[in-house]
Each structure stands twice: as structure tokens, then as C-alpha cells.
Length: 255
Image (cartoon, rainbow, N blue to C red; front, side, top):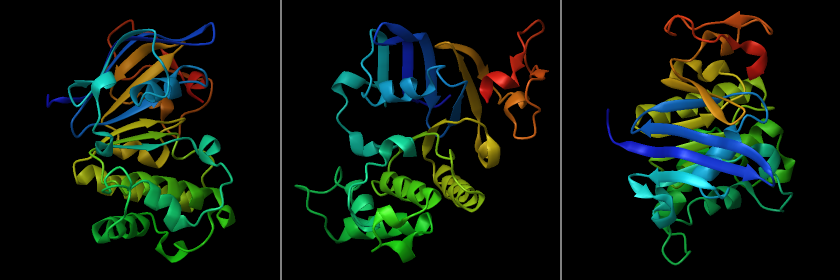
């Protein structure tokens, strides 16, 4: 195995008085594409937000690129795409302005130079939004808005890309664009951690699936067929590589 890019060991987190993560272990190695799956409330988004420091943990250890998160400062190495529903703030800004904000972690003294503007342009081209560069983000469709959020993360040319439900509420055309964009990043060696509701068009890219239930890891290995886009809701499936006697993973828990 190559070096870990993300490492969680015994991580616990509460939201108010409710335990959300109950001592999870998770390792993502360089170049891997790992999907976090589970029902709403299983702890998927809390797990990725704990990685980037948006959620305070009560116990356990988190490392990024071998450095304890509390001491990690190289945030330009990490691109983060939040859920679109939480990222849409109604702020009047153009597409270019939003994507340029993702480059500030690499810009000197907050001033964008030619190389930074080129990186922004490339990111917009990658997600098929170069022709909307001057438009206000409020004029975009949901799928187009999601493309802009992904371009913002890509503008920093990150080594690690963390995406929270990138396909949620996105039209099929945008899903195909996003899948193609992500495929290019993976081929370039980017490490990816994805929170997904279902695998959908990203399924061919996934190396490993980690399924959470009630804040615990219940599966870590090949993507279970139960979460494939053709699975029938309510049916029980056991992945063919699962050990004998393993608990079935219910499709209904992942939808």
C-alpha cells in the first residue's frame, strides 16, 4: 500500500448530545478513490467534515498526508466540494469569482497572478462552464452550480479531493460531465474521498467502498452490489467477496 493521505483512528464526534461517529477507522491511500456510503444520518458528511476540521471530534486521531490535522497547514493540497444545498448562499458573484476563490490558497498575498487565472480557466473548461464564466451564479441551474463548486475545488490543483454528495439533485447531463471530470483527475493521480447516496455513473471509478451505519463502519472493501444503480430497494445482498456469515447489506439502508 502507498502512504496514507487520510487516516482516521478511533474517531468519535457528537452533534449536540447525539453521538454521530462512534469510533470509526478509515484510511485512504495515495491514488485511491474511496466512496463513503450509508443512510441519511449514518455519519458520512460528519466524517468528511471532521477530516477538514469543520466538525470538532471528541476522541481519536486524524492525519492528513501523515501530519496530525491540528498541525496541518498545507490546505492548498486539499480540495473540498460541500453539499450544494449547504454551499448555495445566494451571494451575488460571477462564476469566475466563485471559482477564483478556490485559488486563493495558492495565491501570494491574496493576489491572483497569471498562473492563478490560467488555473481558474482550466478548471472551468474541465467542468464545461467556460462559456458561463461571466454569468452570475444565481442564474445557473442546480447541475451547473454543482459544476462551479467542483471547478472551485479543482482550481487549487489539489492532491486530495473530498466531495460531499457531488451528484445529489444533478441532472443526467451534468452527472456525465462530473463523472468525466473526476475520471480525468483520477487518471492524473488525485486521491478522492466521496460521500455518495448511490454509486451511479461514478461506480467504475470506485476502488473501495466504506459503508457507515449509526456512526460505525459496517463494510470496508469492494463496493457492495447492493448499492449499484440497478439494485432493487428493500432486497438483501451480500457482496460475493464478503466472508461467510457476513451480515447482508440492505439496499434500503443506503437509499
